[in-house]
Length: 280
Image 1 (cartoon, rainbow, N blue to C red):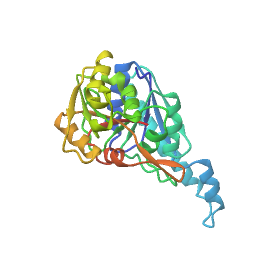
Image 2 (image 1 turned 90 degrees about the vertical axis):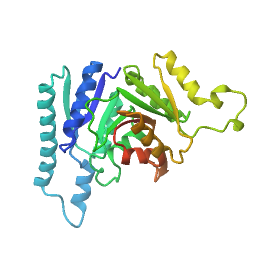
Image 3 (image 1 turned 90 degrees about the horizontal axis):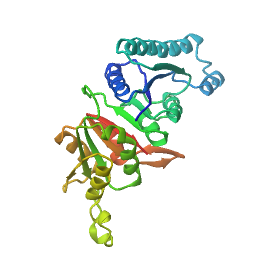
């Protein structure tokens, strides 16, 4: 069960949708819901701006950042009360959005963010990428074009028998057990001649179905023999099975000592039309 859910609160057009999905999950899991907002600048940034030849940022601008975040949290509070959320709180934190949400993930079971939420100032990292690749808990990304009334009723798993995919499935078990339909798309299936006589190597889809079946999650395996790109294949299959959630491992590569999303993860984050649950 997800007992602590963190919702990153940004006052934009998608707030109402994220709030509806977050409160729905909190009700289903009996969870404590945390509304978290960030000012967008860290204390170190203030010092750097003050020392710059252009001078410090005016105090009025500092206050405006704080007031905008506080106003978004007030909207969260009003909506949470209106929706009858049993247990919730707000947290207003000074700092970059990505770094603030990453810190909040340490004491959460699930983090909910928008597709971008604004790229973190001065870091170049968007919130979903940064938290999915560095965070302590799974990240539920709600895309801009999503129109879902709920999440987790029809789930598609992206499966390639990797450690990342396994962790994503493990993290999604509270949703998988409650889903009406679960499909698993076997992507990048290994060639049988590369392995010995281990049946789990030869047929990872069947092995996955057996494992999840013992956990009380019946799953239907879907294959796409024409798949040339894992991310595109997952998006196509998600549409075919009418999934309201895609569960996948988050993959990245090193750049200046940071992990940045690439490949299938980048495709999902940029192009998903339905919610995506990611974990690294």
